[in-house]
Image (cartoon, rainbow, N blue to C red; front, side):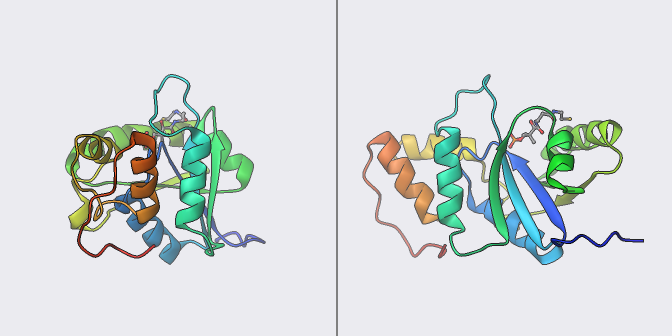
Length: 177
Ligand code: PNS
């Protein structure tokens, strides 16, 4: 029988989010349709050289979801399943854009299950229009002068422009966030 949780169901959506894209936002929206709260958990990984610091990524996500108390943001280090257990989440959400994502995600999900069988991984598929969108490509395209306004929320475009010292490109109407 499903356990009743005092603060409702909580799912952790972990990632690097360097930076968030509209694909991530699409997954959060889908998560909110199933769970009461979605907590975006940014991995603090000293081995990676991110464009945005962890603090900047937290601030970007906070701004993107200002006024939506069902979306939380946090950072973590160490094992994801330990973090999920600590915050009382029994579900990890991961997005699968294409079959190419699947092998790595499947391995992680099974390893996480072995580490803590109480925590379930749920895969969600973003809209097909985001199937090719990744944080890495967004950064590359923006840094080389391409337009990313339909691929990221406005706050990300603004922060990219500040970070890279590049003016924003006028573009088509963007998704409102
Ligand atoms: O967005 P990313 O970079 O693909 O996210 C990867 C992430 C953060 C989900 C993964 O690296 C992770 O969970 N790291 C935490 C360390 C851990 O628990 N490792 C074992 C996973 S099987």
